[in-house]
Image 1 (cartoon, rainbow, N blue to C red):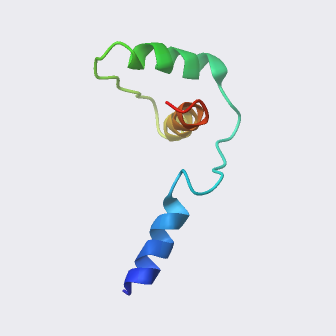
Image 2 (image 1 turned 90 degrees about the horizontal axis):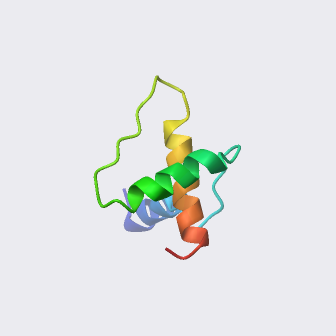
Length: 69
């Protein structure tokens, strides 16, 4: 695989380079995550398969990026 092709794939995955579809924003859960993340403890997000864990974390990351944190 060529370097340019690898960079193109990585840029496609890069959260900062393009707008990600993060679904319906769950403000209450994101606020809970924000408070937990300030505790300097390890935070585990767990749940059944396909319950929205990854989407919630994407929303949380997007919120942090939007606020420049």
